[in-house]
Length: 147
Image (tube, rainbow, N blue to C red):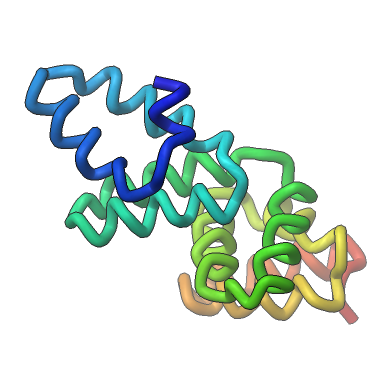
């Protein structure tokens, strides 16, 4: 399963179909969990492939699993994705982070480069809800990461 998780993103929908057809749902869940360890760009690619195949719940699950990594690691991954002009992937990762983590944990994501990450985090939070935006803004202020 670990080897399959590290394979091409396009194979994820096929693996989902095959494992579910064989009634190996637990193995599919394990594969999604293994995918959480992929580099951020590959993680988002796997989620994109699942979404394109109509497996939205699985795509959201893999992103939720992926954002449990340390907050500063998520911040660095977002910086790397934006440096490669992969803004959509960065937004997907931030969206999952904002939806899954507490505002305080999400604020820690900005630590690697607050000047660049705070606006991206606030935009992601605003996309989720006004309440999430204000909660994150407060957490960022408490953490000293915004003026």
